[in-house]
Image (cartoon, rainbow, N blue to C red):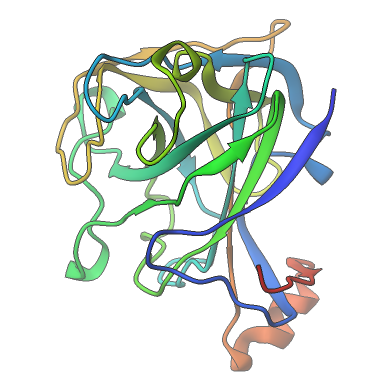
Length: 250
């Protein structure tokens, strides 16, 4: 199995080129993206709309205690390309409060009244197999109150690419074992009934799914990071939550 790390660039966002110390707020991807990977995946399937768009699959996450109110600056997620060749597609990241029926995605996530949070990346080429995508995000994605879960969702479309509907049907996400390494991940995922963008949509239609692998709970992989405030950096360092990564300008 080959892994590929890709820097994702949102349509209107840029990634910092500075070396920095990122605090991990949630992570169920696993060390070096291999420790928690189950070796299995789920494809999401397209519709005939234009652009061709897949269903949206979500994972329920709770950030680490003490991170409430922090500004998320980086997001990492997995994409599984089950085609025999590389394909290009846009990834569309969406988020909900877990205030729907039985903890399902309910109201769309609009932290601090700053507006709905969502990101559409420029088209990325995905090699066959598991791909790991990392993107920086602009200020405004605020971590909810401690103990409050949100749903992180991902859908794909072929806008601006030659990717066909049949190829889109073979895009999905890798499955990663529970529990999360940092924070808490739900035991079930949520999958929408229909395809679409779902930006700003409350109570999207769908159902829970149990992605148990080898008799162990699994979920789609996500990682969220933040740059600590200077005044809090020393405390974060003592807590062992700081990782160091060098990013170069794309």
